[in-house]
Length: 205
Image (tube, rainbow, N blue to C red; front, side, top):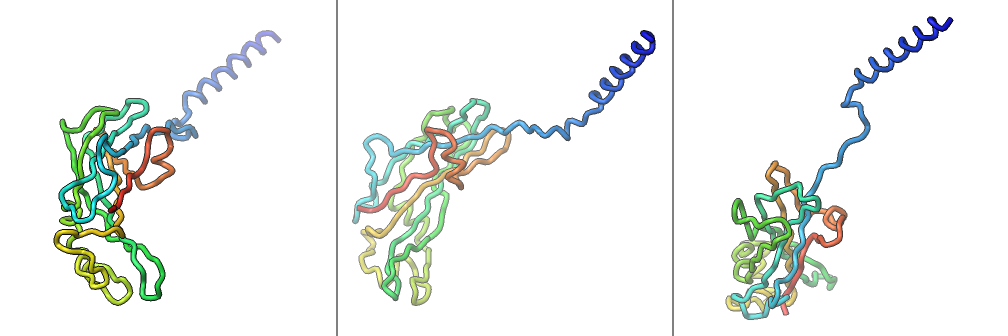
C-alpha cells in the first residue's frame, strides 16, 4: 500500500512539473506597465506672462522639463507646438472662439536635449507666431477671410498684428531613445503625476 501511495505521489508531482513547464507566458494576464515621460512647463523667471499690444519683438520665455519618474527613459528630441486662437462675436452677436491651428515652434534634438528634470529655456515672440500663422484664414460667419486682413478686426496693423482677443497655448512632445513618442494630448495622462502639466497659456494685454 505504501509503495502505491509513493508511486501516486511521484506521478502527481511529475504531472504538475510538466504542466508548469508548458505554461505559455503569452497567456499570463499580468502585463508589466510601460514607463513614461511627462513634461512640466512654466514661465521663466523674469518673463512677461503676456504679449504687449504694439510690441512684436518682446516674447514670453518658458522653462520646459522632461521628467522620467523612474529614470528609465532618455529623451532625444523635444518638440514644442503653439496653438493660436481668437475670441470674436459672430453675426448673431454670440461670443465665439476661432481656432487658427497648431504649429511647431521649437525643436531641440540630440546633444542639445538637457538631462532629466533639467529645463530647456526658450522664448516665443509675437513675430514668430505671426510668421507661423500669417496665411491663416477663418470663416467668422460671412465667408472665409484672412485672419490678419479681417475687416471686422481693424485693430490689427503692421505694428500690432495681435489684439487682446488673441490667445496662445504651448504643448509639447518628447521622443525617447527607444523611439517612443509622448505628447500632451490628454490631461488625464499629463496630470497623472504631481509636478507635471500639459500646457501653458498666455494672451495679449
